[in-house]
Length: 106
Image 1: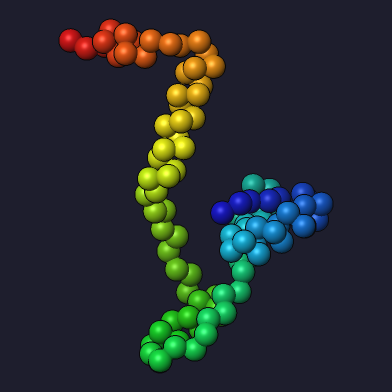
Image 2 (image 1 turned 120 degrees about the vertical axis):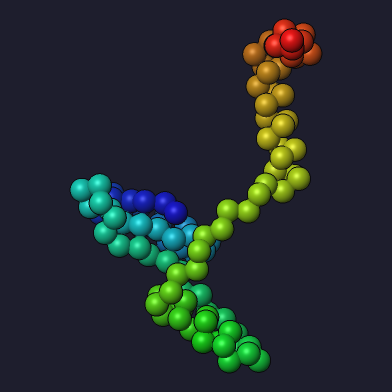
């Protein structure tokens, strides 16, 4: 969730709209305090289950807000992170990672 102050929001309207279109919620702040939340309207196709339809209607109307769940990184994301670490080590001139590892072994 990205936050923008009410002073900066008018100048960043297009950026804010892009985030909302991408499904992100945006919070407006005033004097460092959260003031308002802007979220995309989630429209769902009708389902066979009336309870599920009622659930999505409550979300669409802003009556309930589903919990934001941070999923664990995918294998691809883990691999990207590992390559980024190795690249930083290579660029810094650190070539003998195994020797550094051995220094810390009892």
